[in-house]
View 1 (cartoon, rainbow, N blue to C red):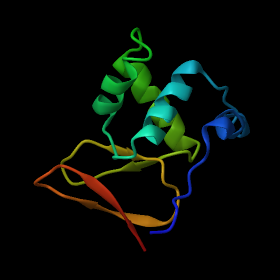
View 2: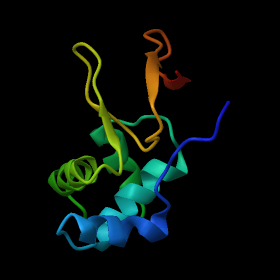
View 3: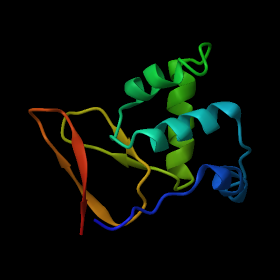
Length: 110
């Protein structure tokens, strides 16, 4: 399977700056969480993972961070019918397979 195209964490600040935004600790942690375990988590799952590193973060902040990362083309929002949006840091052209029984989502190279 070819390597995925992912913006490294150290390039996050520059990518945000290129979009006219500043880097924040919250954005760094949310992005890091997406890179750490690339299992296409929902915002609620990201929130649960981020809480261990930033206990005072709110769900609204996580949603705002995710939206910013999508707008800056650092991650993709993945939508399945009647399912919560999931987030994918793989920027290489690919499709997604969602296993309804296990609830897992997998990248499929095109």
